[in-house]
Length: 173
Ligand code: HEM
Ligand code: HEM
Image (cartoon, rainbow, N blue to C red; front, side, top):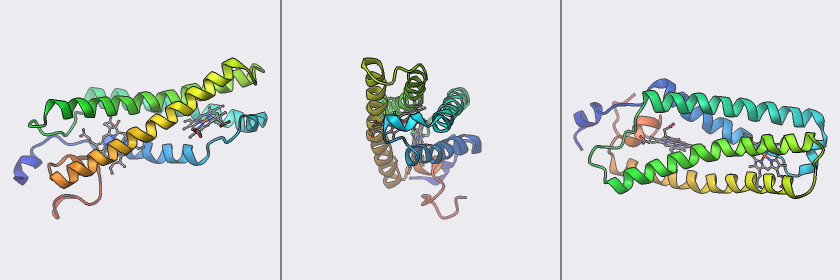
């Protein structure tokens, strides 16, 4: 593909890249420190930390979502088939929904625990929804990475618009 063509495509700003990759790190951290058993929340300090972490996570996600929707647009080339544009939109929206649902259901678990509703129907549903959102996002992230690799192989500029390594052209920064 013609390089001038790619250079003229809109690119993600440094802030957009910082938010995208910052969230990848934040999400990996959240997975590493995940709770394995409900009764770990008996530790009040851990419960407080989880609730603060989830609150900050949702707030940052909201800022990212508003910034991305108001200032940035996808790097998919204009020639991309409509079905692929739709697939990308569904996967991106799905990841945002899961990124919101995971901490929000986590906060609900925290609230029920704090209200002493530590077992029963309500907390089972909250934990089930929390785990379901985690499973769904794993699949979506898998599809997202596959799609990114597909665009890297196509060399259409989508990969390099967001990913800081293995750029398509040697002279790209
Ligand atoms: C936790 C893992 C990840 C999540 C939740 C995620 C989420 C997203 C979202 C929501 C977008 C749309 C733009 C935005 O609103 O920020 C996006 C764009 C993008 N991501 Fe990721 N991403 C992840 C990891 C990765 C990885 C590992 C790669 C590459 C190896 C990658 C490559 C890209 C590319 C190339 C775009 C631009 C797509 C376009 O222009 O339409 N992402 N990502
Ligand atoms: C950004 C915030 C959070 C992330 C990314 C996250 C992530 C996870 C993950 C990956 C799992 C394992 C799911 C599975 O094995 O299928 C999990 C389970 C769980 N999380 Fe969270 N979590 C978050 C917030 C919270 C909060 C705020 C609470 C409660 C205060 C919480 C309570 C739990 C509980 C009770 C489980 C289930 C443990 C079990 O299997 O019995 N999480 N979380």
